[in-house]
Image 1 (tube, rainbow, N blue to C red):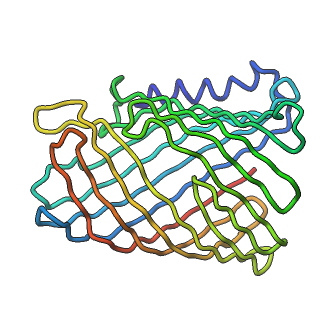
Image 2 (image 1 turned 45 degrees about the horizontal axis):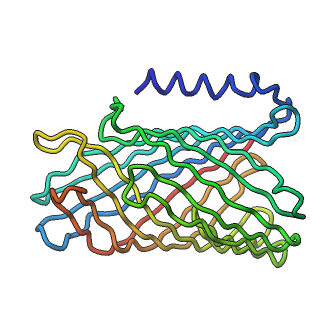
Length: 281
């Protein structure tokens, strides 16, 4: 994995120079740790405990001095403690790159189209096999009639996943400087800012992850991880570069299932705690 990671990171760093990028750039590191305590399962007796960690490095610039481009490198880890009779890997790992750009949509006022593609590996080992390679992509329209409203509509395409195509629908509404409704698929949330440093928020999300793993004597078996979470928390802006947040909430409809009917573990509803750190430069 280290060699692949170094090659991908080097390409990301070189691309702005190849595209004649402007010197003005924006860099972001978004990392979180989410812990889900041990819970009993429905069906096979036993318990499952899950922890999840994710770090995403993003780099924004303008290619050819006018085309906005965003490059990302993301590393995801899911640790599993399992005492059920269904064999599960001790950990799952994902490595993704992403390139995204936004363009005006012909001559329509305040309307843009955004494209993104994410070459990725999803496996149960740090040495990702070629069979775990996937290329999800997305395309959606953005319409901003005024400073308060933003609407999005489009599709995400996930080749070799259970759901090949999923809709992308949502909106962002900011009635004032304090209140914000960000109801978009990636991380829907409602937030209220008390001041320049402290913000309260409620948020939700879902996982539709799939990993290629080894089970018994079989290789390249697809293991699905599904969950829905809803929670609330507080965000604190340390300074103009760093902000952190702490949230708690509930996990629902959570299960791990082998795609080829090789076993399923339904995990009872429970709680989670998440700590997130975002650094912008």
